[in-house]
Image (cartoon, rainbow, N blue to C red):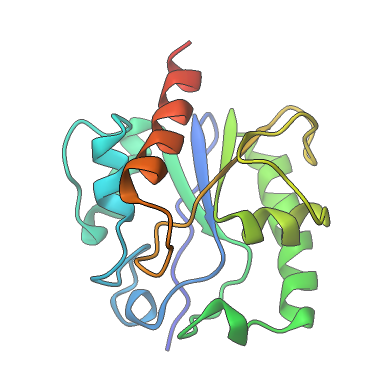
Length: 168
């Protein structure tokens, strides 16, 4: 199974950072490709995208100023399968990617993604007071996985706040 290609470029408004690709994403080569993942609906309902995109169109979001990467590249069934070594390596690689491309915002799709990256044990939702990568605003949003117990309206509300921030 292949890793899912990053969609990164200079001058991006947001880079969405996930844990790692699902097995389905690994099979298709597209971010947030699992049918139970609500990512694309959340982006549309929050106003971040003008229409509902499909996982196969993930590269098209570069035109909107949005990119994609993960803290770990290896596809797994669940994030629980990621090893400490993979997180260590991924943290370093992610730091380098964000420092090189310098998006305005890095949106961490899941609080656990950000705690792994920042090495902080307790972080609030939303915009972080201090950034790990200088010059990049770091925003923590709920995971879009269908396994998340938070009501969809609350999840969409968090992404709506991100939309408001980038629109200011």
